[in-house]
Structures are given as C-alpha cells and as structure tokens.
Length: 242
Image (cartoon, rainbow, N blue to C red; front, side, top):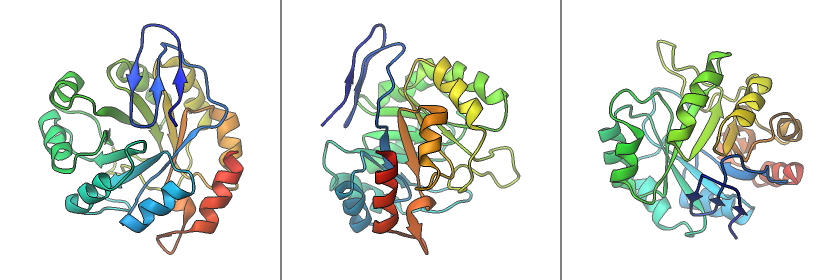
C-alpha cells in the first residue's frame, strides 16, 4: 500500500510511494530498501519480510552485490509492481545511465557517482515514469551543499558512506556509518525525501532513525551472513525499525 503526504509545489509518484510536498512530513516508520539482492529467492524473501524496495547492483569499481544486467532485468520483471526496484548504476554520463536503465527496466535508477555530462532533465525526459535517486556520499560539510544543489533536480536523495575521491572509488556497500549529524541537516534542508544508508544494523537502526529522521532506510551487509540474506537478521531489523 502506497504512502501519500500532501503539501505544495512538489509531486513524486512511484511504485510504492506518493509524495506531494516541498517540505514533507516524516513518516513514523521509514520505508526499507534491501540492497545487494543477488537472486529471485532473495528478492522474494526481502519482500515477504517487509521490504518496500530492492537494490540491484550493476557494475561497480568496488563493493559487494554486483550482479549481471540480465539478472537485474529478471528480478525487476518478477517483482510485484508495488515494490520499487532500484538499479544501482556507476555510469556518470546521462546517456549511459539512460542506456543502462533501458537494458534492465527497473522503475527507479540510483546514480551512485557524480553526474559528469548531460543533465537530470535528460534522464527524466528519456525515462518517463522512472524515479531518479542521487547518492550523496557524506564525507564532510561539503556534502550538505552538494545535496542542497542536487535535490531539486531529482526525486530522492540517498545518503551513503562511500568515498568517490579514492583511487579505487567506494560507491556503496562499505558497511560503515557516517556523520549522522550532517545527514540530519541534509534531511532538514532539502525539498525531497531522503534515504539513509551506511552501516545500518538491527542494533543501531533505532538510533539512526531518531538521529536523522529519514524517509527511508537502505542496507546491505547488516542483514547478511556470509554474503547471504539472513531471514533472522532481517526480521530483527524490521522489529527494530518498528
């Protein structure tokens, strides 16, 4: 069942959310996105236990969870339409991001690096109905300004703990938390819903929610054992979320 929040000047419609407002009210229970989905079985497990969104990881310079575009397309095709399917793409040119999404047909595209050429409007015009999520890697105070600049051009911001400035870029899946005080300031200052990622686990997610007040939560390693999605950890996570 979707969520509707009413306000003014902003409208986003999606597979599992409807948000209308320039400054939306925080949900009592954040949406949960399970990332690094590696099979149809993991996708079904995540959805059965309460996930509102699935993260499907395309080619990356580092990090866990990478699967083939063919498998991403298969999972997206077999996921209920009320569940958001996120393509995580490391492409940095609008034309390449568009081409990547068209290969897999997810209903959401998550851009994990900085857009180097083209514009978000190019992506939106070429992919009507597909939601755009831009990842901001919370490195320091400069991340606040970056989020404020980009947010009006996208549907969602996702705050993570990578570092795209390293020789081998970290674009997600680090298992590390970041400065939640900066994340809270971002949530309070941007006009779109914000997902929080980075090192979330059953034992710290309650603190994360209270500290940041995000629209949604995104996690990968925190609910896995030996790389596999762990039903027990996933159940504990949802219990902690509330």
